Length: 179
Image 1 (tube, rainbow, N blue to C red):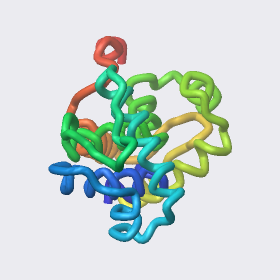
Image 2: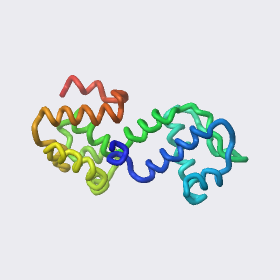
Image 3: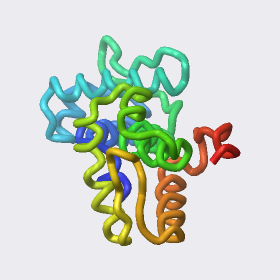
């Protein structure tokens, strides 16, 4: 549920490939090996591996090399769960949830400026989140970044989604007191 709502297709593909990397991390494999396991094109596998390398480099602060001259090898520095959490917390729907909770005075324009996204992209990528809220009779006003409905249900829903996605890590704690 969370993955479908929060991650776009490229992130889902990265996660699928990363799961294989962690499963087969004991030795080097060719790109063709991953291509056949995933039914992705050769160029897509290379592209996804490059994106994963960039993500892991950001996460660890040190350059990660998965693509080797004679194949693909991942020494398991980051677990699947940690990478999953990273991808979720980098998604626009998750960033919207955090903004709604921790920056209640921000509107869509301010959110877009802070996170370097266009309004159209944010609205498009938050549709599944908005649909999810509707199940609980919560209405999301995207332009004002407000939620309307039973406050108890809103609190429980926000808490659940943010906890499932982040497990309480990497939240803007300094702003908790000002809310």
